[in-house]
Image (cartoon, rainbow over all chains, first blue to last red; front, top):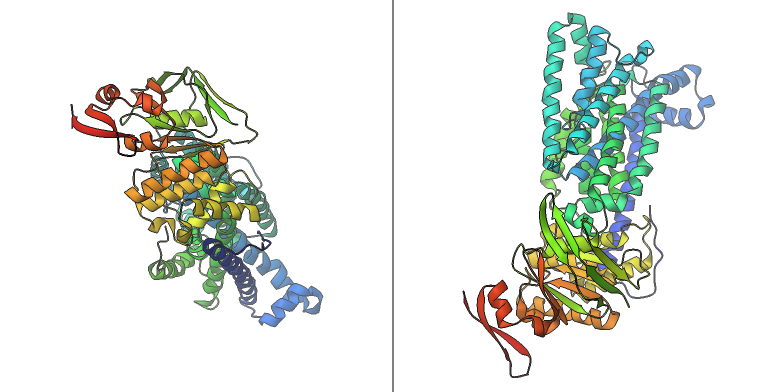
Amino acid sequence: MMTETTVAAPLSQGRAFYRTQVFRRQMILLALVVALFFSLCVDLALGPARYSLNEVIAALLTPDSVSQQARVILWEIRMPVALMALVVGASLSVAGAQMQTILSNPLASPFTLGISAGASFGAALGLAFGVAIIPAAIEFVVPLNAFIMAMFTAFLIHALSLRRGVTVETIVLLGIAMVFIFNSLMALIQFFASQEAVSAVVFWTMGSLTKATWPKFWIALGILAAVMPLLARHGWALTAMRLGDAKAESMGVKPRALRLEVLILVSLLAAVAVAFVGTIGFIGLVGPHIARILLGEDQRFFLPGSALCGALILSVGSVISKIIIPGTIIPIGIITSLVGIPFFLFLVLNHKKASW
Amino acid sequence: MVTLQLTRVSARYGRRAILEDITTPRFQGGQVVALLGPNAAGKSTLFRRILGLLKGEGDVTISNTSAERPVAYMPQDTGAKAVLTVYESVLLARMQGRSLKVQPEDLAQVDRALEELNIASLGERDIGDLSGGQRQLVSAAQALVQEPEILMLDEPTSALDLNRQINLLTVLRRLADERQMLILVALHDLGHALRFTDASMVLENGRLIACGPTEEVITPDLLRQVYKVAARIEPCSKGRPQLIVEEAV
């Protein structure tokens, strides 16, 4: 985040507006952080055993001050799930944000590029037939399969995109072709698999945070923490990409090289997220659009904003998934689409300016 | 003072040669050079070749510069889709290759570029809401804000009304005179070239067919050969050469 020292000269109209805009955006980011913390606390409080917000905050700040049972439930059972929601939401949203940026396409996201579909196929191989693409500990077979297939899809798209004459639009088409191919393969698996296996596959594709554990959380967080600074480093260049390749090039950006690097980084983010929690719909599409409406496309704000919006949507989704039917946690993938999309449409339709 | 010289420069897209064997005298800071020629003569390609975006045979020699990126380029494509204000989009051009932290000096340069081009009042507008002419001026500001020693503009007046065409060219002339910039500008209006530029390069089918002081380059013969028009050049009442086009031939 930047801060600026004021200069004595009278400010131009544009600069005064810019200053106000920067301040407003910093406040919006701060508000998102506060909302995120609040949502996290509510998420922790909800469940079969209910706690008050005071108890949750006490357990967070001074774990020793609450009962042994509360400490175990909050820290060992709910915390990894609640934190996983934040990291996965942020990862998917950032992945979608940068896919939209480098492909200049408002529909680009881990889903439309086939990365999630690839992951689902990998997971289904493991769930239905016990196939491990790489031998691994039993609890990691499914996520590892999903991860490998997601990265395979991403690299396939990269490889095809390097061919001569492949434009940005073609890349999106390639992604959609991948989605259809993997959907067919999934149908094939479900056709041959047993009834129980089919249920497992369907449940996996719904996406659920209950698969989260501390080790999975640390891996996902580690990847996010590694990728974010690498993306931030290209902040100005990525913002310039939205002006089109010709314009970006004229500013000294190398669009092809940047596109390739960023595509690999965000594929990694998306692959890890999807591998651990399954297909969670629309975060990668909606998170960035909400961030864009709130913060514009200057990556200094858009990048952290996308991460925060994605985390917030998934965290709120997690809360809602617990309260719709008391005692039942509805798979989060269902909630994010059902609740996220109307909210998204409300924002888009009520936003006075163009949002793409 | 910065200089630019092309020696036997070529460029090709695939197998198709776009530029062939272009050699120019040494241009230097303070000059405004017009790049003339009909559509598809290779003007934009020459700009991209000078900028290093295209590879090819021959040498583009830029001397006497201390800047890391001495050349700024305003492409024809003014690309205006992103959700950015005019001010942000100009700042963006300034900040490429710099740290994420914006310094007061960067903002001062943005102000200066916008004021220079008389578009300071557009600062808060979204670039998507601008008219074609306004976008073109913003695009020029994006090049100018990089404080280049060599400024290249690809048909910067094509979407401007007459008043703004004259204003922009006057600004370019002043930048060359005051800041000793070398300015290369692709123009279709030969009257503008006669009035505002020192030298002209004329491209046709990727070859340089004339290069020298503008008044010597733009002749009735050249107009007939390259632009396929019959025209006269006569001094106006103030003594400046004026182009009078009679008919297409």
